[in-house]
Image (cartoon, rainbow, N blue to C red; front, side, top):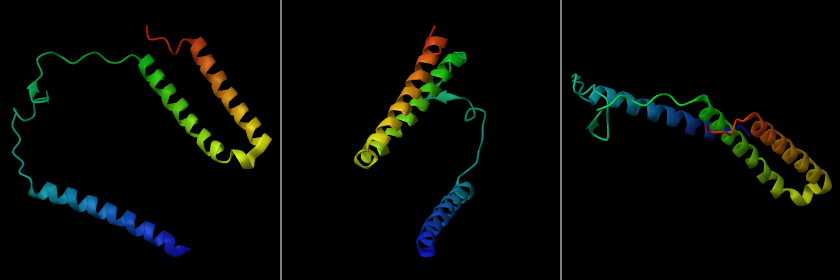
Length: 118
């Protein structure tokens, strides 16, 4: 049993070693000649001509967080669908409770106005 974990450990340690050594090699070899022109912000090779936009409102982050939460919770339905035959009625009732909780949360957020953009 330990041999199977040893292979995974070797792969992880090799990945860290390779990543670290390549970063160190790049830091040692690359030329470092900073100048004020190089430190100016630009996008796609075009200098900035106007100040950046204002910050996003918190509503944008709430909607994004809700999307991520419901997307991850939807992923939990795939193992249930695979094992549907073995779970029978008990599994069906469990998934109904799970989906009703998701629906209740969505309706709560909708009623609170978290999905409104204005």
